[in-house]
Image (cartoon, rainbow, N blue to C red; front, side, top):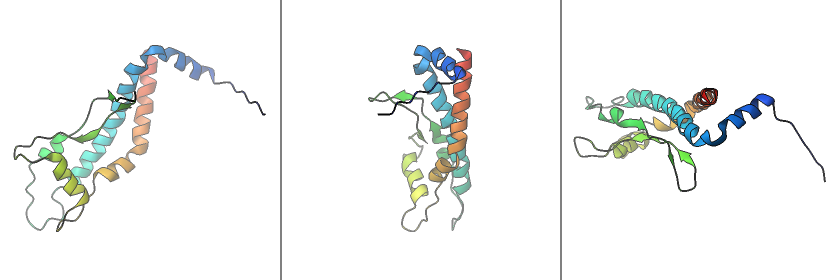
Length: 143
């Protein structure tokens, strides 16, 4: 059976040793930094599709754009940290922001789909990773 060994770079080992028990503090900050990048892209996409291509005058109130946000990082039952980019519910007209966003994203009978979330997710992936790397480096430097 073959045996392989390798040495990790010294600077990487120093960063890992600095983390210690601070990972539960650092991970939420890193994830929220990435979530903000996706939120910004989703908001710009949403503003571009609202009211575009309609037969009549747009009736937008701005509530949907205002309801888009990033949740705080929370740990699930499996120990994984998650952030969610989505909509807070509770509109003045009693309807659900999530339902309205779903209709915009996927369309309905007589209303074509105007995707804004899926393109935001795919187009912001690299920027999100870069923002999380930068936030991680910054947090490690502060330790």
